[in-house]
Structure formats: C-alpha cells, structure tokens
Length: 177
Picture 1 (cartoon, rainbow, N blue to C red):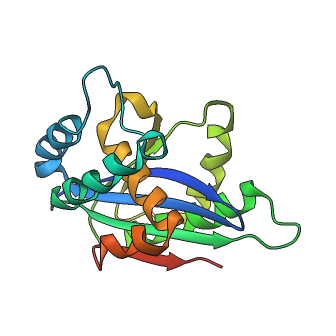
Picture 2: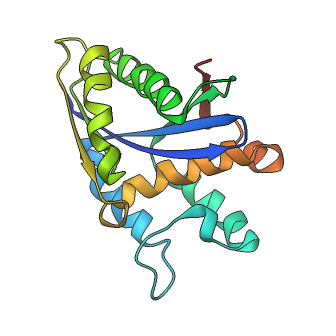
C-alpha cells in the first residue's frame, strides 16, 4: 500500500470560498517539490500565485500542469449569514471524505492560518473514518513547496474564465454547496 500526500490551501473570492487539494504519491513528492522550487524567480522564497504578474501567471500554468499531481478544488458558495469558517469547514470535511475514499493512507498538509489552525481539528476529526489512516499537520506556506501548487490551483479556479479554461480537465472542481 502506498501513502498519498495531500496539500491544501485556500482562496477567497466574492461569493465563494475555495479550498484546493493537490495529491501526490509519496514516491513522486521529491521530484514534485524540486519542480515547484524550480518555478521560483531569483530572490523568491515562495510561489504565491496572486502576487505574480499576469504574464508570469500565464507561463506558470503549463509548468504547473507538467508536475505529476492530481488537483481538486472544493468550492462553497456564500449564502446570507454564512461565515468563512463555515465554508472552510464544509470544504475541509469534503476533502477528508474524498481523500479517504482512495483507500490509501493519507498524510494531509494544510497551510497554516496560525491562530485559526485549531478550528480545523474538530472538522477533520468529525469527517475522518478510522481507515484508511489519515494524519494531518499545518505548515508554513513558505516552507512547503507543494502547498504552492494548491495555492495556484485555487487561484486559477477562483479567477475562472480563461484562467480556468487553461487548466482544461486537469483539475476537478467539486461544488460543496
């Protein structure tokens, strides 16, 4: 049995909360990390898609698609009275269920939101089943290049239009409600 590594980051757009999940087989993680680091410009510490120029974003899309990973973006539409925390909980619970449906052990890595990380614990515990095993941690986005991939996919799907079209069928978009 192989272990799958899953990396999660968020994006917020007017009326939508997006939580992106990139899944990579543990055996491929080193190559994927190196490829992600290779996308950095001199002096950059991390890739944060919304901070890149329009031209650079366009060139990065093909590079992202060349990295051997599967990507899903879970989208929760805002409703009157729905807070970001509720939207995040709905998306995160859906990600946990989706990941465990693979039947493989999962190591889930979420970009840290510092004082809000504790809010994820009860959501994950409530959604996960005893098997297959699922462990998780929160990390700094600057320290884990594979979180950058999740950030990019969330941004691209959130931007919609031509940006999402450029992804083709390489990203699964899941409507959480």
